[in-house]
Length: 246
Image 1 (cartoon, one colour):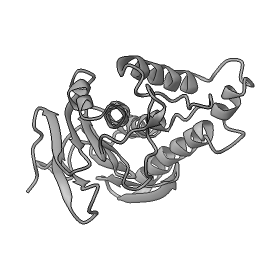
Image 2 (tube, helix red, strand yellow; image 1 turned 90 degrees about the horizontal axis):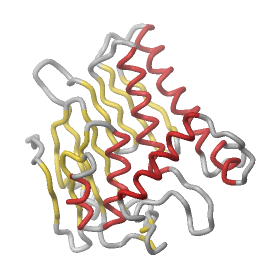
Image 3 (tube, one colour; image 1 turned 135 degrees about the horizontal axis):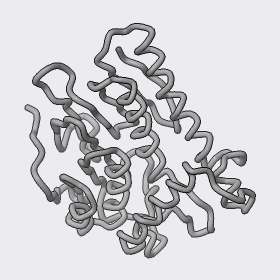
């Protein structure tokens, strides 16, 4: 069963390898409902979101969800030497580098708890998977070239893990190096394979901010494999080489 929706401004799809009965449909709806709740909570574009009210000092005690995201962001800031930072130069907060991967991983956990063990959740190119599409096969995640949308830099086989990519090719120079406050320009894209999408998403953004040196750094922070694409198109990678699909 496939379930499609747009959340957090990106198209998302759930490929659930289960009979398309009411139980599966209800589980898919619950997963997307969870994402919409967190989108409303963390949106930097809604004045009513908890994130925006928190940055204005209107929230006395943050919700457990906001507290967890802020803790993850601070851990990443410290680990990256300040390169990853959800605090904008104007003092505002933009937690998108944490929230999407974290929220999708929570949705995957909800589905796993419901007894669904074979699924692929694609959130605008960031992918979390459980099991495989059929017995004896792993999920295949394609990583597009940042300079040519019809070309790939990798096709990776993944089981019970996640792949996240942060790049400049769709949203421009939207990731800052928190150490300088300037846009990160040393890489066009960064891809990370990790055990969960929370980790993969944070690390991919961090690698883009850090530049080529971030590839090796990510391996000590939970990445199984990391890839960076330089502006000249050359690749820098590190970690256990993932299985490559044909």
